[in-house]
Image 1 (tube, rainbow, N blue to C red):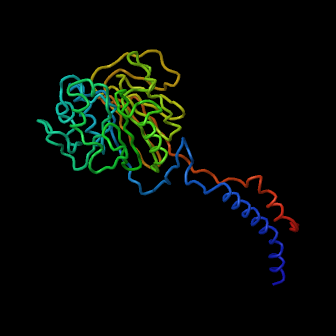
Image 2: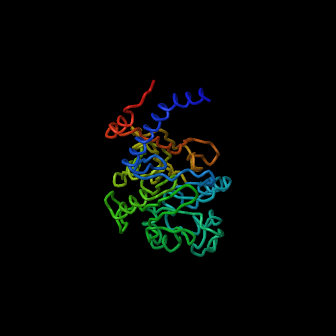
Image 3: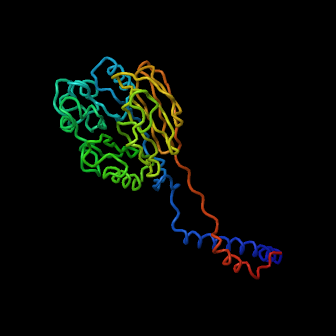
Length: 350
């Protein structure tokens, strides 16, 4: 019994020291504010990873609405992937064709509550699974933007969007929060970095609690293409506002770039035509203009996996973006070190 008593006494200074460090850590944490569940990155606070979050897969197609065999080839490939839904990088229709011919004919199983047509009478989907962004040809061709807005019901009756319009909108599917923008200068709320549309995006990105945040629209902010090239008006600070990836089209090529630490994709090989490449931008990582294709993206709480695949099934690019890592607890702030020293005074550490 005496030996046990001595052992307990000999361990007392050690436990006191641990308690002192714990007290200083707790005070420091309280001084610094509550710890965030995941790393604060690029403007927003991440949602804690949920082990039971369902993984999703979706396709991305851009500059495709021609009604051609090339578009059909890409559409048929996408169907073999069995994606949960499809998003587009704009130019959903070219020339005098109507949306039923270039959208309804190929993607009716993903549409809900669209305009009536010969190929697709309102859509076969029980929940809308087709989320376009507006391209310049959606303005200039056919019936223009009014025909686009009449055909699509966006984001769909089963989704809520905070924009209160169909020209730009947001929706959440699985672990991803999507933001479809209108990059055309005719947008009533503006399409510059200080516009009302941009302020809406900044607010929504920074408020989002989804694991992932993807922004997509038509005009590519950065591109090495000989035609169009980089579109400076859309070089918004997406990363600083909280975006994880940016997807665009307009230049009929495929390209992956890294800008401000996040991936930017140009996805414009959906079936209309193919543009030549100019000198590679410093931000460029992968460039391709050999054939038509689309992107397949898979998302879960732990990673985003992007692939660009040609209509023949060749994988041109594969890129994985891992989820943010938890932030470690801070060490005691120097301001509170005197508190720690006072706790240690008089301790016999022998």
